Length: 316
Image (cartoon, rainbow, N blue to C red; front, side, top):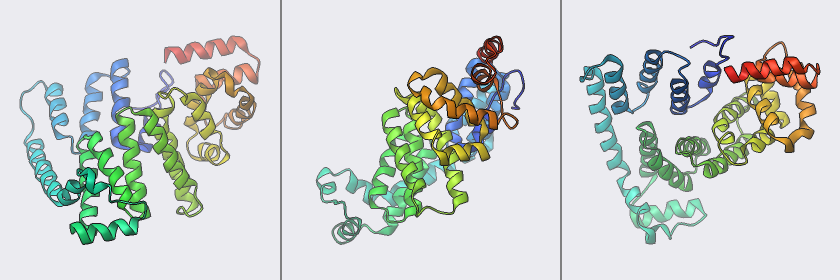
């Protein structure tokens, strides 16, 4: 899938910044819009699914693509491996899962993680191995496409985890799960939790910080264009200096989404003037009909040109 002048498809630029599971909704959209041949989309889906544990889904698509009732032997073998691994992880995490399913037992947990770890060890013989097993089980559930189960277990894991890096990884997984379940209010809360960690002074290297901001903005697109107040929220986030700098240096294509938010959001018009300056600065590195529409109206005062650009964006 390559970007062309005809459709300005940003999938090749956006997809590398997403968890592979978040790419599936984009492929569904492209398939519905018939921007590419069905065969091409289906092949790309299988390629993506081969890197997950959603083997049944991959088998169904293979059958549809090749008009057959039989799945390839490697998929059959892969499915057996996934089932066996899932059972193994389920057994390893069972003591902690059983504890978490007991409301009376869960009430014993406190805000103090060290107390919780000690209490679990002394009263329930649950230690670091079982807590790590819960993370691996949750992660595997996510890879299988069980986003609801993954979200629940990742939330519980974070209440017990004392490793900051692993806790952040679990939070990213929780965010992805809520997005995929279209729980936009909860997803927005998780987005802000990830943002607070990324923006903290104790975060990793500045380069890593920039990369995480870019990922967060890409993941946030699902929330911003579905949440009731999303078109305001995207401006609030993307327009912050640190995030706008990340866009300009590493992801100028995100200007399209910020431009769209400004066009449909009258309440943020005072910030539009500064955004127009950014568009002018980035004119040679990135442009598309939506961004150029704003330039035509507010820079060149070319209203005929603006109408033409808007027509192009509607056609694409």
